[in-house]
Length: 428
Ligand code: GDP
Ligand code: IMO
Ligand code: MG
Image (cartoon, rainbow, N blue to C red; front, side, top):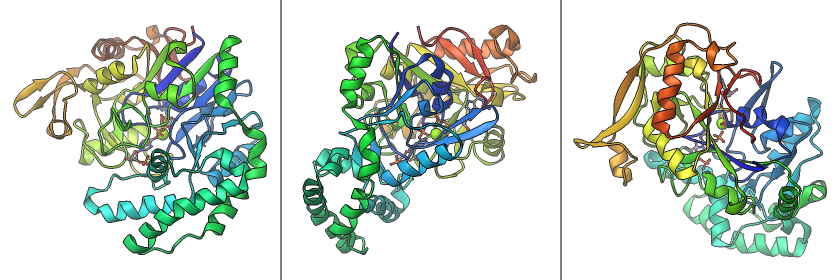
């Protein structure tokens, strides 16, 4: 199974970084295909914690070539900060390759992201403020700046000039901000060009050759199914395609070459930012789950909203992504809960819905219908096979598998690289 997509099944922070790291030893390339430094993946190796934002999780495995694909938006200052940070900790980052077609996040888009949120007030999205939305909007409006533009100063300057004609109107007249100057923006970007140049390549061609040579390629999503701009809880989403379909457009690997889709599903649900969340827990109940799971954002440090597992969402993720393998994470966090509620359907305006409703209005009205599962008290963090788990935990997993319509291939029982119950090989 040489080309595998790995996505998040819920609203992000499912443990995608750990799941990618887990199979790192069997993989040759890890491609990030969407998003930017709005992502935050925490990977724990031998007790050392690494927080990654823009870099693919594969950067931590010496035998992996990490790839930033064309579908990614890059903040160059963050890229080099992250590379320097890892180098300072003894991680060799020299293998990184970057697509010439990836888009750059210019400073004015970071400003615009923050001021639009402020102006939206109560209707804000709760973005990470990293300039992601405005940069993808520029890409679609065809006024974006790409990595390759750094190597043609004239073109870059022309493009910045063109973009600023519109952006400065917005910044100054609508948002009462300082105008950005063409020189300031161009010079800042050019300042990174020499350091970036050796990493830049035609990554779609590189990956095509790798697959032809029988190499194993993982396409790793940032964000997750319900944050996908098409299939998520729009407008409370990110601005890219975080579902399996996005892996093709964001990497240049065609759908016919993709062999499997791993969806990472947290044993409960979290969400950062605004938007509907049917199984959300509030007050002391929410606090207990947040504390047990350490649910504070890797990128912005914001407390994550927490709630019970929602298998309507799990089924939806299987359907939209074509999931071949589920990796269930953070099962250990549910230890001590009895019973464990799982949402199996919604009641919406008096009608039962077993599938995601068609409209956002209905989703906002969704009231979860719960089934209650017997809990367990035993510490499961040392479990490595299904037989090591208490019967109640196994029954919980069987129910998840059945309700989410996909087989579970691995279960996370702690943050460490080795804290995993392996059921079947993810790379086949
Ligand atoms: P990502 O954005 O999907 O890569 O996920 P994050 O890294 O933002 O959030 C997942 C958090 O859960 C990280 O702090 C991981 O170290 C941690 N984690 C991952 N898997 C497990 C697990 O099975 N059990 C526990 N307790 N923590 C886990
Ligand atoms: P990983 O890869 C969780 C959320 C933001 C906000 C919305 C839009 O770690 O799972 P954006 O800055 O992307 O325009 O914000 O999306 N969001 C995430 N939530 N995990 C993430 O990434 C996220 N990336 C963006 O909180 O609600
Ligand atoms: Mg995260």
